[in-house]
Image 1 (cartoon, rainbow, N blue to C red):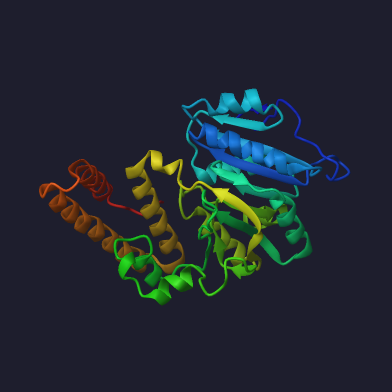
Image 2: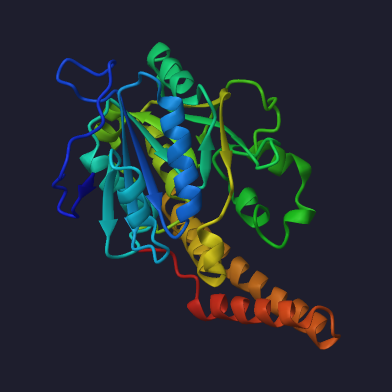
Length: 332
């Protein structure tokens, strides 16, 4: 099923036996995809395999992929609602577009580089229906080898910002990252957390009605953190549910543009800290991040001069230099 960018569908959503009396689906799955055709195909197959008698619609928002993703969805999955954009909308805007046409009482935002394991959809839905205080649920994410992928978090502090995902991370005090990664609870323990990673998030229609969609000033990274911060501020809880499992082949879209990934990640981080910690702390963090990239340029350059993996070192120097040139100004 195709749908144009004005929001007008050219077909009808997938129906099931457990929808409401008006025939609307219980669950809408929104997938924002960019240049991961084969992974997207596997993701859609896993969703359909796990559907059972669940009244579900699937909405794919394709961001002008150049690998034939949109054509694949249209040809192989005619029941899927396809929104083929003529530009890469980014993760938050793409999800907002998908949620804007969704009909379900519950909304699942799912990455295209995922495989939903059997029973996951019903498990999350049942948990949400039985726990009315919970506003959003994240499944347990697994790596391709079956090991558990870290996906639950507490809200970041300034200490977290200086250590997590920076060149100082190997030197971070253990307590700082243990607290951030919620390492005080077992991987197989259902837990209330501050936020979960955005690869698989299920929420309620009333949540979106109450707090709005994702902040489209972000393009990629930190948007799910910001969104769940607003959900928490509105009085709802976020849960990590390990009894529902999803395999996540992490970073398959972002790894196609390494320099842009660095810039998007850091600028999104700075926007979050400016919004929730103030301009002063965001400015201090920006200076630190820029200094960190300068240090890395020097280190990588020295390694290159000494002949250690020169092509890799020069590639990194070029990438880090582009980050410095960007200035890492927080997203508006």
